Amino acid sequence: AQTVTQSQPEMSVQEAETVTLSCTYDTSESDYYLFWYKQPPSRQMILVIRQEAYKQQNATENRFSVNFQKAAKSFSLKISDSQLGDAAMYFCALQGGSEKLVFGKGTKLTVNP
Amino acid sequence: GAVVSQHPSRVICKSGTSVKIECRSLDFQATTMFWYRQFPKKSLMLMATSNEGSKATYEQGVEKDKFLINHASLTLSTLTVTSAHPEDSSFYICSAHGLAGAGEETQYFGPGTRLLVL
Image (cartoon, rainbow over all chains, first blue to last red; front, side):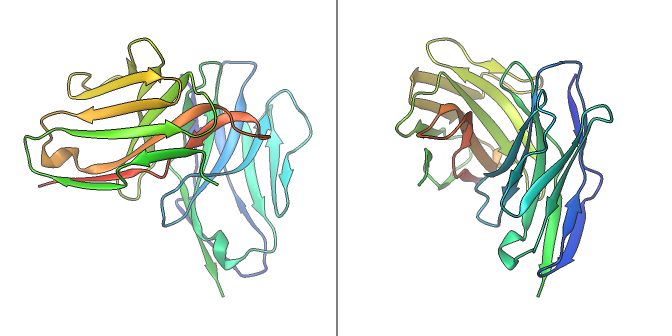
């Protein structure tokens, strides 16, 4: 079975500062993908960043980057220069060969002005 | 712009009636679509995997006779909540797996449908 664990139900950060959201996972598959999704109050799921497990290089998308530690099965998200619009629920997700996504419970991020 | 649409965005119905929710992939074909349910302040719970031209695969604990899924074409999947009851009130989200535009092959999510059963 595949599992995704987000141990931080809530996090807060000051505007312009950096915050890191944690995610650990478990899978027996050798080929898989990891994702971070953002869900703002509108509840539209927005893909933030994606990482292929076979790639050692950490994925980056502008102010968003990940720290992918394959051996430790860890996949944290770093948000730099936090903006008010970054406030949302963030979900870590794992996709194996079946195309199904397994989601963590989410972390609610608050950005303080 | 949006690559997956859902209709309606919100619906209120009386207990005992059936409600149909449509999920469409825009400008790309999706052989696989997924239906999720999300309770307030909770994560997404996968209900079923919808494959074009075949029966849907339901997750454990999801009543297939209550949540009817039809994937009639490569761009349309429907979820029908039959004989709806207040406990079926929830936020339903669909996603479509495919390649949209110049992006990567991945799951694209619809905006969701809020169902309230009175």
